[in-house]
Image 1 (cartoon, helix red, strand yellow):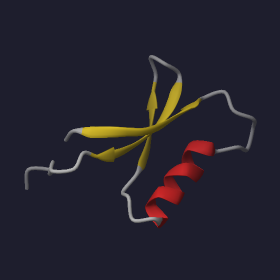
Image 2 (cartoon, rainbow, N blue to C red):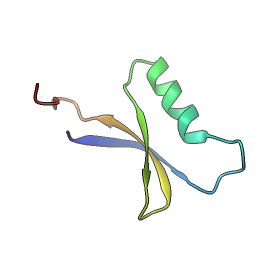
Image 3 (spheres, rainbow, N blue to C red):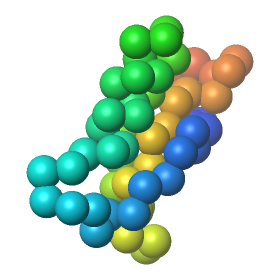
Image 4 (cartoon, rainbow, N blue to C red):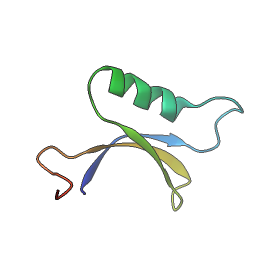
Length: 58
């Protein structure tokens, strides 16, 4: 499944702070499916969504 990166957040945020999760929750509340994934190469959290027009093949 192709995904679009909506936003990037550094992994080294303050303890107890979850900006990527907060952003993803806001996107979901607005009707945009959003998930947080970790990009190990860049040490960042990515908020991603399925690209329009792509399905899961089912």
